[in-house]
Amino acid sequence: MKSPLTKLASRRGRTVAAAVIALTASALALSGCASAAQSDTGSSSSFKEAKQDPSSTITVWTDSTRLPDVQKYQKENPNVKMNIVTFDGSADGSTYLQTKMQLFDRTGKGWPDVVFASPTDVTWASVASSPSAQPYAAPVDQLVPKSTLSNFAQGSLTPCQVDGHTYCLRNDIAQVVLWYNKKLMDQWGYQVPTTWEQYQALGEKVAQQHPGYVIGAVGDTNSQESYFWSSRCPAQQLTGKNTLKVDLSSPDCTRMAKLLDPLIADKSVSTQGFFTQGFNGSKVLMSVGPSWQGQYLYNSAFKTPAGQIAAAAPLKWAGESQTYTGNVGGGIWMISSHSKNLKAATKVAEWLTTSNENLSDAPTYPAYVPGAKAWLANPANKDYFADDVSQVFLDAANEVWTGWSNTKFSDATPWSNTVLPALTAGKSMSEILPEWQTAIVNEAKSVGYTVTTK
Image (cartoon, rainbow, N blue to C red; front, side, top):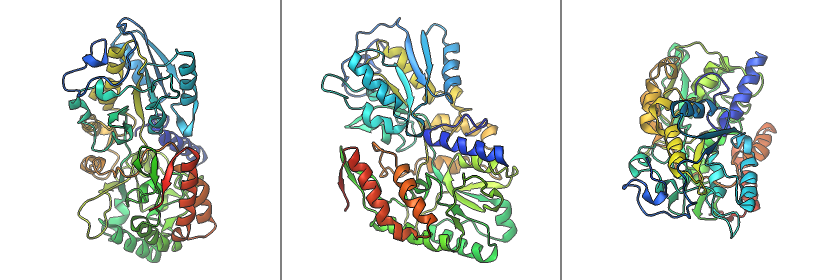
């Protein structure tokens, strides 16, 4: 991410931005039809197109963060007729977009041609709201060349994929890495861990030798995505279109809980969130967190001087050859299946997500690999750090585990409502796993999932 704080890149990022601001105040060429898309797009159109009118105005719904980008496209393409509308972008679990789309389905008009949203919105936008309607989102694999889609970071389009089609273009990702204060690590003679086991051992050493300093925190609403997602815990793993596996008794879950228990007990991993009012950022030696944390946590919130913070590769478990990591954020763009000007709508969505010109100064790490490289070449995105973060970011972007599925509900809800209060009450993470599982299962069933627990 980059300054100003209002230019954060995802639903979770904007939640973080509010917290950061609080901390700061107190101390982020197609033809006129889909079937005529470029020759390498794959199979034929899988949706019923509206009658195309290449001269018609396209309506673009965007959040305030991406409004300047949409306006820039309009300025550079004055012949494209655009109606730009700002809305909440599905921030903080808002259902405004879904509610409006259901209204448009009933009235048969009003759909925006292009919309920015949360990946969670794909779960309803890729299916019809009624037997007489068709899904809002057009399959972009019928509109955008395969050669373009293949240039997105590995797995980054997985949240967009339903029943063999891709229904959105990923705007940004927030791959989890290991952040550390290089100045302090060098001063104290500590080695940067490469495995979870080394991370645990270092935390226990820090608790003894430098009490008060922490190597992580589990008190934020997205902490589970940094730790348990990175451990390949099947907390919410789709095994069918509407079947969700929730198994927190899996060794991939219990191993992370057991690792965290002693670190929480000796306070080297805080149960207070990094974005909690008054958190002492000067005592953070390390954090397991997303790519935006460097700028928006250490720089903007903690005011850590430039040249001290560095990023290392995501941790892996001893004996495992493959590294997996989590993801904390990232938005999407969808194209309307009802659009009367698919050519113009697709061009806008493609430019927003794949143009180096647009992405080089994007607020967060782009999901499109060429755009990510342009972003990393921008001094504003890396000069703050003690070392070049480029290769760490590029590698980690391809290591996000795809088994933590995009679902109809937010994973933050069970974590925030069940796990965080229990941690505050003094329970261990291992003790809380059954309660967390029950909360996820209940949330999943409430939105219509069939749940399996083994």
